[in-house]
Image (cartoon, rainbow, N blue to C red):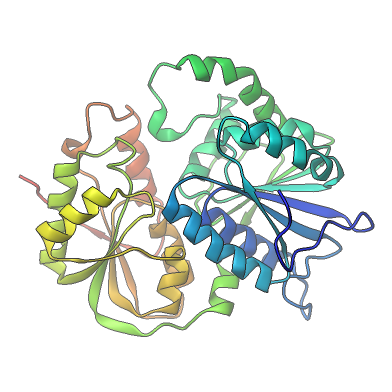
Amino acid sequence: MSLRAGERPGSPSRPLALAFVESPVQLLNVLEWAHAQEKPGEAPGAAPGAELTLVVLSPNDPMTRGQLRRMAELARDEGHTVRWEEARGAAAPFRTIGGLTPLLRRAHRVVMGDPFSRYVQLLLPITRADDLVVVDDGTATMEFVGQLARGERLVRWHRRGGRPGPRDLLFAPVSAAARRRLTPSAHTRVEIFSAMPVQEAPDGVTVTANTFAWTRARFGPPRVTKGADVVGTSLVETGVVDAGHYLEAVRALARTHGATRYFAHRRESADKLHRLAVETGLEVVRPDLPLELIARRGPIGRTVLSFPSTVVHTLPLALTGTPVRVAVCDIDPTWLTAHASPRAQGFLSGVTGTARDVHRLARVSTV
């Protein structure tokens, strides 16, 4: 829990904004939120009247850790304090929460990238902050807003429909307390900072658009190539889509559109990616930063092909002013596994249907 080189402990004389992230995309969107707080003429990283400390609750996955370390470097370059927590393991949560409690008690604002996270839900009741901000964690933000508006328990969309397990039941009181804490009141301001379409925000919740202004200011414009690139998804790894159908769909897309590269999602398995490279002939690229930054730095294909995912909402924003076209291919219901949530097809269709500035492709056949 020690601070790294170049970091500084929070100063008790300044208000503290405390951000919790567990993925590279969450950290990117905290940087976007911080940039949106800056006043014209201010130095980069100077949030008005407040000090921002980013707490990385590091997962075990090597790809995610690598991207998080790169994003942490960018955050330090912006002048923010970064605190890296080895937060996994049997005793780690107790050590991490104990070490963070003084900061939580002092923070006037808490920014979180994943309100579904059990870690975040455990930390929320400790803080006295009256200003809570939720930044994008991809398409999950859409589901979070809807559940909050309807007063439902907080559960990720791809798990809905299944019976709660013993751990879910044990954690239910904590999750319920977190939902109450995230409900606006006379003493609590709640903001959603999102690039996603927010259609049913609860009364009292402030919705602020994430336009990826920081990304566009710091990177690019990119060199645009004549070809096409495919964006990978972890729908197979989360048990939503059958692996065989997915690989055949990628092969059909690549053949139809002349794609040459496949940008892997950080959660995609090595075995699947090896099989994909062999069966499709695509060059598999494992990015060291979120795709929005990779695309903005370039080179990037003139056409970016994707299945329903966060990038169909975020890439058009990050690539504003470039000739890049983002095209999305819907998930055929026959690709879903027997274990997929009953809501999966409707949710994925909603992700595509609400996307702006994207070209919709016909579903590809995997038969």
